[in-house]
Length: 265
Length: 291
Image (cartoon, rainbow over all chains, first blue to last red; front, top):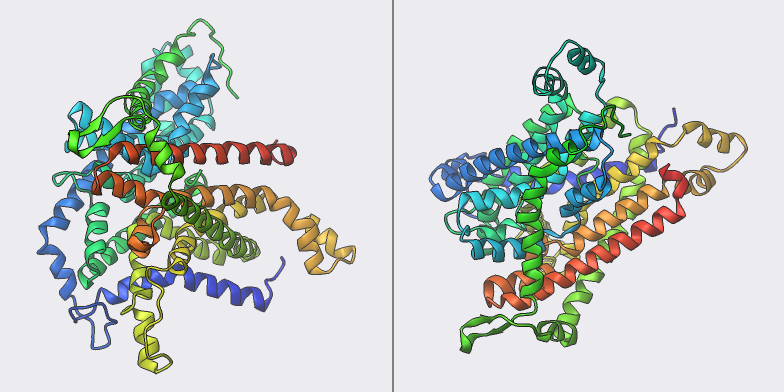
């Protein structure tokens, strides 16, 4: 095993500090007792965490974002499962073109999607509706859902399916009783990544959010452009805590690097 | 990869991808086409806003106005800077990570990849709290007495670039790390045992083999910086307008949707052109690495 040189370890420590500093500082500032951004030098206070609960603005947006992520991720997965099975098992004309088309939202900057969705939703009268918001998020998270479900389907052992077929099961029963239970782990990973992607999305949502359909990141963005106060820090710190728990669960079951390796492409 | 015993059911794959296809055509393709058409419309407040028609006026305005040139050039320069620093810092970090013991590696991976799961708004807020004129860094430096007046980082290119490197560098580490996994450590040892200095091994053996990872990581970082919105908007403000924040202002500020659409179309075309030509270049140069 090669050892890292001391110089490399100094670099590594500096790098980790750089990565964690902004998140750590948010968590520290969140505990301040003062009315402005400052480190909690005079003892920790939960004042600003209580203040979140007095802000229905943020609470409502939080619930909306959770609902949105839940519905959008479920629809995306429901669409991705049959499509992935088609891609993994059939060699059909236009297969590569379909695949490229399904992954193409990754190539479109979110700002462009935001512009396009705003015009579209206004035109069809869906602007400011939950259903309109859901469909815009489905498009954004489909590529991630598709990729993770596809990798679960591709690695599948087909012997059990053949056995079920030879015992006379219909194709729907084979899917329900054999295939689906086997791909659940991959599907669950895809669902969680889809949910998080939807929950965090801000650039596109800023365009399509109306006063009644403002997601949490959009509400936070609007708040930050006006004022940066300990309230937004305590809210962000709460989100960091929640994310850390989800992250540890994801890492335990899947390995974070495996789930995220295609996120940027 | 794809083979199927029963050829009889040839319509089945189409049926299986039909629901997803319908959603994509109705809610992705049509909105994009509508935006493309909208970019040829004109906008006149005196005549009631958006006027349908076909005119190249918006494109002429964006491509001919030095104000928009400045915005596009600033976005390009920002993307190049962020990509450069992500390569400079992310590549060695991935290499160091790869040489650590498994236990440390997985803990450090969590610290580096974890921020990807936190909203970019939160991560940008962290930098705003750190570098603001009454932010923590300035409070500390003034408190110790090193400086009298706050250092100006908020609303500067430096501040935006630092924060964007922080936001996007996990993609670079991940990409290089993935290509390091394919590297056989024996090759490195062979180089050393043949008498090469560590730096020579790095330069002649390691770097050429992880080049595909560096290049694909750069592409991700470049494309995401070019269309970044929240970070330049919060840390750069009105003084450091980029393409994304300009499109936002045209849409929601001045309500000139046709002009905003034209900016979006140009951004999309530039993005797709850069991604496809870069991919072609990588594939040609490193054809064997992708087999």
